[in-house]
Structures are given as structure tokens and as C-alpha cells.
Length: 152
Image (cartoon, rainbow, N blue to C red; front, side, top):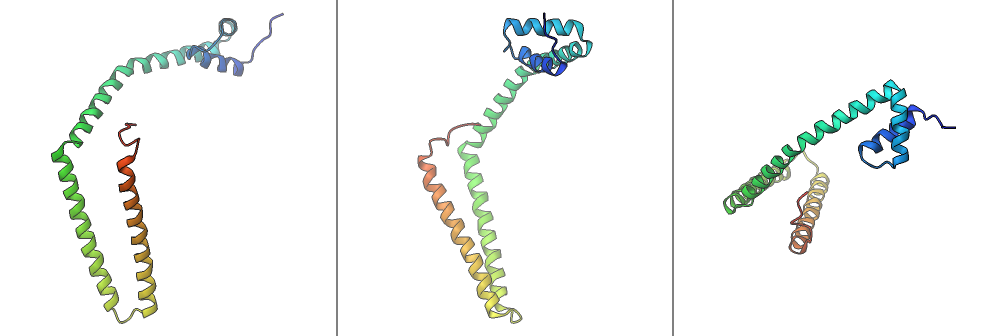
């Protein structure tokens, strides 16, 4: 006596069939059920069409990879790297001067209590120390990082 499978069980088999993971016996169960069940047959056909369209789009994925490689080569050119470093340097200099001016104005403001000036300054000085220590650590680890050339 053959066991009847529910559509939920067949749904799992359909996924396995499309991934080529079913045994011959499981494939036979799937085909027997699909012959008798219109909704499962429609689901199988729909997923097969989706799989075919995805496989047809794969060659375009190779073009995308070539484009990413071209962009990486452009970004790693010495001229691009120098320009990027100059931009970071200018941005850091501008931010430093703005923060310095703001700190000067903050300390010159007579309406702000002295305890608040020290507390605020201590907080930002602590944040700066933490940032610089993490930056120093990352720059040191960068030299010996085994995964720095890994592309994701």
C-alpha cells in the first residue's frame, strides 16, 4: 500500500528536486504526486521557470565581477590613493580647526559653569583618546592582517 503525501511534504521534495538532492525513490514520489495534484504541478513548473531565469542571468554576474575588478584596480592606482589621502587629510584638518574653535568659544563663554566646562572637556578628551588608541591598533594590525587582501 502506497502512502499519500501531503502538499507540504511534496513542497519540501520540490525544493530538493530543484537542488538535485533527492534519491530516486523520493523523485518517484514527487512525480507521482505531481501527476495527481494540479497545485503542486503548478508550483514545480513555476519554480523551474524561476530557476531557469536565474541561471540565464548568471553570465551577467560575471560581467558585474569584471566591473568590480576594474573599479578596484582604479581605486588602487597610486594617483587615486594619493587623492584619497589628501581628501582625508584636508577633512581632518578642517574638523580639527572647527573643533578647536568651538572648544575655545565654549571655554570663553562666561554663562557656562566651570564644572560643566571640565566635564564636557573630559568627556571629549576621553573619546579622542579611545579613538586614537583604536586607530593606532588598527594601523598596527593592518601590517600583519592575513585577510586584508581577501575580496568579499
